[in-house]
Amino acid sequence: MDFPSEQNYIEQLSIDCVIFGYHQKQLKVLVPKLNFNGDFYALPSGFVIQDEDIDAAADRILRGRTGIQDTYIDQFHVFGKAGRSNETFLDKLLELNKDTLGEKGMNKKQYDWITKRFVSIGYYALVDINKVIPKKIAIDASIDWYDVRELPPMIMDHNEIVAKALDHLRINIDDKLIAFKLLSETFTMKEIQELYETVFNKPFARNNFQKKILDLNVLDRLEKKFTGAANKAPFLYRLRG
Amino acid sequence: MDFPSEQNYIEQLSIDCVIFGYHQKQLKVLVPKLNFNGDFYALPSGFVIQDEDIDAAADRILRGRTGIQDTYIDQFHVFGKAGRSNETFLDKLLELNKDTLGEKGMNKKQYDWITKRFVSIGYYALVDINKVIPKKIAIDASIDWYDVRELPPMIMDHNEIVAKALDHLRINIDDKLIAFKLLSETFTMKEIQELYETVFNKPFARNNFQKKILDLNVLDRLEKKFTGAANKAPFLYRLRG
DNA sequence: CTACATTATCTAAAATTCAGACATTAAATA
DNA sequence: TATTTAATGTCTGAATTTTAGATAATGTAG
Image 1 (tube, chains in turn orange, purple, cyan, brown):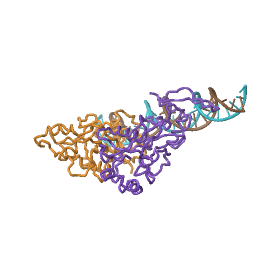
Image 2 (tube, rainbow over the protein chains, first blue to last red; image 1 turned 180 degrees about the horizontal axis):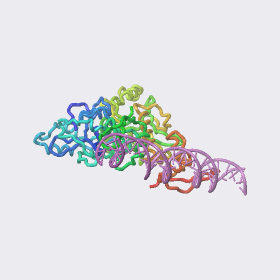
Image 3 (cartoon, rainbow over the protein chains, first blue to last red; image 1 turned 90 degrees about the horizontal axis):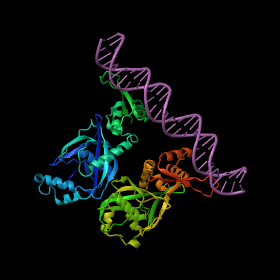
């Protein structure tokens, strides 16, 4: 959540980013906690600059808020209920932070701007969790990965937004080949399978899963991966192109 | 395209509606032509009132612009390129209609409001073309159904919007059972098949198509339809529920 | 009553999916 | 160094689904 100052944004329109990562059989979402009194968790959000594509805005917000760049990102849903506003959350935040923020915390103009009803475009990003070192910015107390099934209560409708993003991740996983974007550049067949099992929360048969994935015809098989374990070394694969 | 006056709309956010109908083996889109000099075709569009859900806004716009109500409607994509604006179109319209509109045609405030860069949420609606009598309102010279493959050149990116809507119609047709919403309440198997063949622009085998559709398990079979033709009468079906 | 046109259904072949068995192999162990 | 172990890689036949063709059913016309 940026506090808009003189920046030339489109009013009442925001972008919320759901950043998925995968680690140790857990599907995770990157959630910053705001650096204020009170437990305020909020998806990385921001606004659209007047002369900026919305996709570019999503990229910029993602980069500015988390340091993540050059990654897969896609819009998935617009959240536009009538009462959808920051006001309740902000009032609570200001109330709990009177001492540091003063009576209002931001000037009236800012407050009026940001507490209006907002329509928000949801984007989801898929990252290699090992390659990303989330960048904590001043506004954050922390920025951490949470299991998608054990998210903290977030502000506004952000928990719903994540749920909807997960729906779309499942729908598009084969179609848009997005599973691989959650893994490192090279990975074993077992790793892909465990990722699928996590995303869908159900087991897949190993033999048939391998066939299904290879039949997608998008992977190159590389040399074997010698893990040091007392067993046959698995092949490594890499997304072609 | 409403010309907003004092109405309390969210700025720079619009809704564009792609209304699909089906008639005589043609997939059609309802497109109004504006009642001005110059051939201005524009999808039914409008804005979101401050205290209104975006879905409700889409319903209202659809109803107000075409008379269509109580119909299936769904958001499918947000169009938000940086330069996305009415300005070119409006300038051309004002230029061609100086005589009736005066030098500017609307006051400066309106003009500034409406020529800003707009982000638009695309909705598509599916209607029974026989049940709908499109309501021509004052701003329209006409409102007609066009074959989706023979649309007139429309303003702004409206032709792209229809193309994207068609993509989503195809993707969701089985999943969301939306094909049936383009037919009358009761229909024959042949009619469904022809609709599918039109939407996907390819033939389906009659015997297997019937099985596929019946296996969806969402149709009730009614009495036969006696057409007067010298052949076996087909059964009628109706979407259950 | 027969011919015709079209719809409805059945059936076998082909393709795909599914489940289990078997083969391979890198490291550990004896 | 041979054997065992634990995992990966591959094969195969059964079950299921899809496809394609054939056959049965039926309302009207002549």
